[in-house]
Image (cartoon, rainbow, N blue to C red; front, side, top):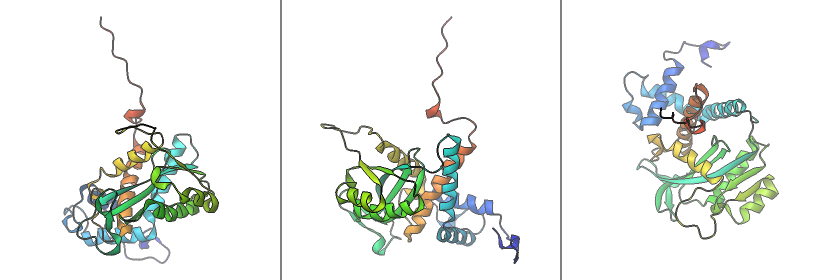
Length: 260
């Protein structure tokens, strides 16, 4: 809430909050520099200042959670999911990313950072965490699942791929009371095939990668990378809520008219 609308009062804001949000979405979608914002938007210092403060305050995360609840309620589901899917993605990092927040993923041969995320059964983002690319998925999953459990105590089941095998399954069951099920490939499977449950999070990753800012990690702070990913998820969910027609992939095909 702007300071001028509180009891203590304050100077009226010069720029409307909608303009600030549109500018943040523009940067996320087009991957331009903050200094390269078009003149139609507020000054880049103002936009980045709001982006940084909202990231620290967790504003984007709260908006994401409220939108996810609204979508689930509209679909006739419980607002708080009881199951989710976990996965990770390694992306290259720009020269602006230095220090301990970047490393080399020896498995995927990618120098940069790694994104760890959990989505619900609709593919809606529940939580995202950005680490150095060299951090093993099992180690990052311990912190991610612990944070997720604190915010979503109703969670009981998490699906994951073979990267989350080993002691993590027993650790999650014993300390977090979570059932971690591993979805593996079928015996003798070769090439790419859609696997149950795992394709949900893979689809969510492809949605997030449609924003150019997320193709390469440019952010010095991992929290800013997480914020850009969350902004994309917010944009997708607002479109789904305001859409007058259901998505094309949920509509039944119309039969072709018969010839006279």
